[in-house]
Length: 88
Image (cartoon, rainbow, N blue to C red; front, side, top):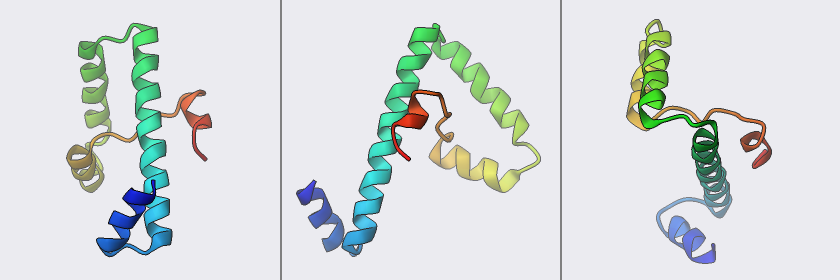
């Protein structure tokens, strides 16, 4: 962790912002892994997941700015009882 923080500080982040960013990244990664595991446990196939993502795109049609950002960065993590307990 020290090496990553040092690199971020050298890149111009303050140590506080770098620490918050690293914590946020860790929570996001942990949540993504838990979500993938939950999908497998529920038997959700890749095809079903793509269908779900397509429905999300239709729901975002009235919000072009938000849709463009989410298409660029990917969908937000979905909260599940397990993943919502990982980071607060």
